[in-house]
Length: 504
Ligand code: NAD
Image (cartoon, rainbow, N blue to C red):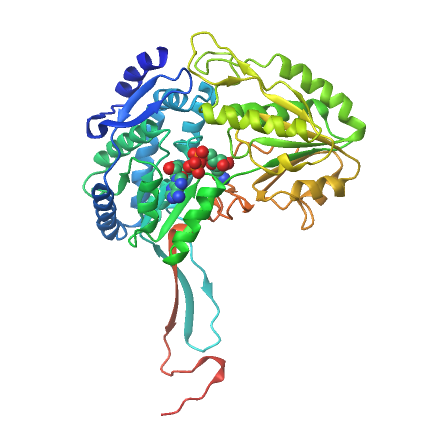
């Protein structure tokens, strides 16, 4: 199989030694052709607890290093990523099935967050606050928090870890990572690159600063339940996030949740339809519909619906579905058979709810017999029906016509998820209304670009069942630190706040 032949080369270029993990029954399977890339051993419960212990010891040392010096390690790691971008991007494609351009894009996102974090290492600002008492000063100080646990999903197997880890390291935390059991090789490769950066950094990087736990749900649960882990950042399904949130709450630990999305776009009468069409296609079929920010629901004003639909149908008929390693392919495989079945079930339900479905059937790809490829589907719906309230992790775009902007915004907000959203309009009133307090209720609300594709700099995350977490840009770093409020009395008296008299 092509993928099995390719994997050795790629791992070699990345300097990955699988010996520590080899010899188990956890298979990394390429969605491209079903080839088994490696059979790995999951960490035992004892190994997991030992790694968390070592990460905790590393934290006790790392927290005392000045933040700009901690940033230097992240800078070196960013250099390793730059040097290995091609090979790591190819490995992401081999293990997730996303097209090579997107595999490379994911590594670029890692590089971008490293750059962001290096700058941040000199900007962990606290406030000074006016005290009501004479001769007193109040201020906020941000301190390292502890071990950050990271649980990640298969579809962004490396970028999500780096969003968390790059910030956590400059904030003075150590990191224990439990990647998806579907994508362990990319995680092992990233850990190898990090260790290379740490070796160049020298003795100031304690062993165990970044640890990797290979395993499935049980390994994730062990991380979530460990009292030495004050923050768990979990990315994945809403079902998983609910379990993690409940377990963290039981021991009063913080959870930072990035869960399922069900993202919509509104196309208004004044929209630039050419621009909208390109944005729709990228957002709906990119990563074969397996992004948390994938466009799943399209609300088109009645007056432009026929024209837009005609354009979309034409493009969908000729979308290049195929081997994601090959140039020209825009739609790669689904992750596995279960994803294929879930897609067919959703399309069946859409038909039962009055939908007219175009596409969605299995596609045969030469040389990729063991992969699950589909033609992306358009489903014309009579209104927003029940199936549209669920996230089906596959390239299905539901389309409904609307008459008033109020109706379209109400549909946008009517689902349990609240990640990303967008509107195409050239009417400033509509754009402002969409972004206003009574507009989209999502964590991301875009104008004249699609809902998918995060850029480092802004805070990323969503509301409601998406979990409420914010990662990556803006002030997301605060989640990885603890805040102390300090009041300093430099007078020779001891006045009490609120004018309270307490004479002894
Ligand atoms: P998943 O929930 O099946 O698995 C995600 C991770 O959670 C895996 O590492 C898994 O082993 C672990 N896990 C599962 N149950 C657990 C438990 N009870 N306790 C601890 N860990 C547990 O998700 P998936 O299929 O890998 O990814 C797809 C989902 O992820 C989609 O819903 C997608 O929208 C979401 N996602 C969200 C974002 C975001 O930023 N909001 C980003 C990427 C993916």
